[in-house]
Amino acid sequence: MSDPQRPRASLRTAVVWEVLKDALERRAKAAGREPGAAEGAEHGAHGAHGALDVLDTGGGSGNFAVPVARLGHRVTVVDPSPNALFALERRAAEAGVADRVRGVQGDAHGLFDVVERGGHDVVLCHGVLEYMDDPAEGLRNAADALRPAGTLSVLAAGLGGAVLARALAGHFTEARQALTSPEGRWGDGDPVPRRFTADQLSELVAAAGLEIAAVHGVRVFADLVPGVLVDTEPGALDALLRLEEAAAELPAFHSVATQLHVLAERD
Image 1 (cartoon, helix red, strand yellow):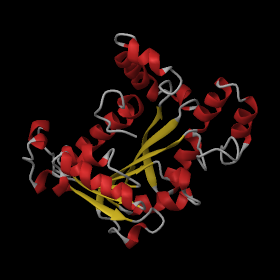
Image 2 (image 1 turned 60 degrees about the horizontal axis):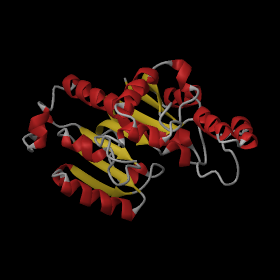
Image 3 (image 1 turned 180 degrees about the horizontal axis):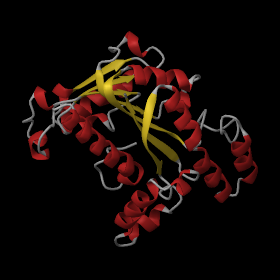
């Protein structure tokens, strides 16, 4: 996943990024720590008083962490890969936010071996649950990492998008396998260990003691539209982005989204 602020990559990240930016702004206002104007972040003008403490579990090389830090917030990235953390350090330095990004080797299972319980205003859990043997445990840990009234952003693989993609590719047996498999996998060669429906993901979030604020379908159309069409047709990228944003909150499209995003809050 690429930097959500890059135009071509925004097809995959735009919906989540816009929702996340709004959530960070609301959380900062509620905490009395509004970061201020965006131009201040670009020049490193924000002081510690304007920053939220953000935890990005499985944040890898900083696809979301670095843009969040550019808004003026402090971000801790927990990831099991040393290579990803090295790339994170380099990306943060290139973006001028090395002082606001910290990488720690670890995973969601042993989260509190490396970070503080209840010490974060916002927690990102993006692309993590589908790789965990016990997704419920991962969500409980993410919730327990939040301060009171904290915000959790969860992004996970959607079942319907995978079924639709296999069917449109002519792999009908694999599409049916994904549809009927308890894990939502289309076969032994499937690189994703687990997928979720919107209801399944929402139930897991609620069971972790969080109140769901919004559910979004992500990459409803982006993975199905030929790339050459987006790259060559004038205005196609912007039009597709607007279509993704318009469809994201409509429940009818959650069932065919490649990814599902849930925004939740801790009481």
